[in-house]
Image: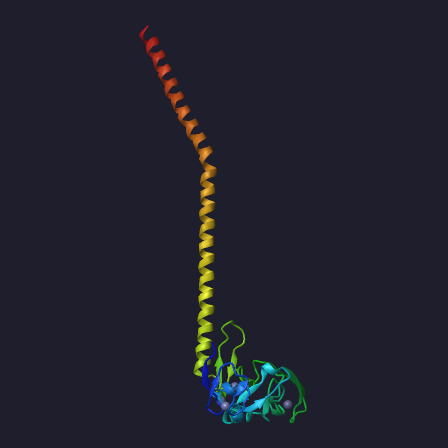
Length: 243
Ligand SMILES: [Zn+2]
Ligand SMILES: [Zn+2]
Ligand SMILES: [Zn+2]
Ligand SMILES: [Zn+2]
């Protein structure tokens, strides 16, 4: 069943199956509004900053304010690395970085003081910058939030602005889900192990039954024979002793 709702652009009543708003002629996406790629809030398509990629599915929309906050973090920063010989702090420039910048690189540095050439390797771990796991823009790690990796391994980072309550709740749910499935599989292994041990014990018991019965029977028979023999000997003794 088609529902009626208000067009995000003009507020007029529109069927949920309409391909275009009959009042303001906005497209289907416009009727529903678009989601800000940073804060996750709904906004008017006409008021959004748009980023289109080759793959239409990946189009991004932003509030102007949100876009400003994340995109202005484009960094032209210097990093200081101390010379391994004379400890002189040498600078090198990161260059301009925005999104999906390669963070693993090697930098050749010639010490400004003693001329010693050395190499500095930038890795994900020692890089003070990384890309936000939500909006993809560059961020300064110690200014924003760490998002613990629930699978283990490297943690991710997010802008405070991007790490909304909804996304925090989502992370929490994922963490709980993973913890529960881990507990479940642990419990299953425990039960399986116990079952295996029980089965082993039972088969041991079964294996011991017939030999046990045989030995029991044998000793019983030997006992009877011993008593009989004793009786006969005693009888003989009596007979011989009485003569
Ligand atoms: Zn409309
Ligand atoms: Zn926003
Ligand atoms: Zn030096
Ligand atoms: Zn972000």
